[in-house]
Length: 84
Image (cartoon, rainbow, N blue to C red; front, side, top):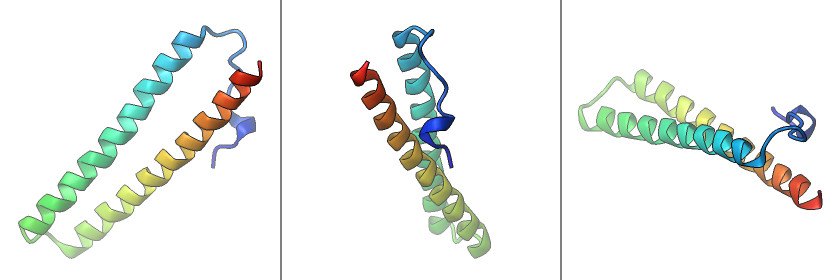
């Protein structure tokens, strides 16, 4: 799990560049979650293999956990920036 200490130091980096990088990564994670959701739904509609559906659901949960960790890291970063 990524912690506050794992976050890179952004002191020498332009803030707009950070926001751009963070936004791109955030949207990639969200798209992956949506893609897995669609794949699971398609599998249900076409009587997909139960083991495959189970694995897809596990992947979706891992992505959801990643989204939550990322959200938390962003909140911590925002707090650090606002204190500066």
